Length: 171
Image (cartoon, rainbow, N blue to C red):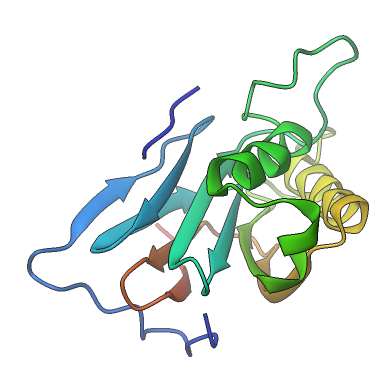
């Protein structure tokens, strides 16, 4: 596990200053940022879950590979959506009374193979796990950029408290 101590903006408006501290959030990791930090993740079937907390001027981003943690899991492995959401909330220092202030942004969950090629349908399972986690914690989703057949990028600008989601070109 990796840890580093929002009127929604239109796509393309998460500017980076020349001095921005860009943090790439790799698969199975999450980061909490503030100040000039920019958090970003490249996604395929994984989902990137971002939370913006305007009052505290903080944001957090998790890069989740799979939906549900197996039975008996310790709850610390943020590869799983079911573990990542509570980890993001703890990392931000948010308590249930704060949840109404949080803005959730999500991207990813693509189906990178033709329908008949992959019986696992990882992207669809990740999206379903994300929806369950939002319902469980009562969190408000302000932007979804999910599904499709190509990868995507999610970026949170912690200084401006903005986000950007973008589809990656087929290649």
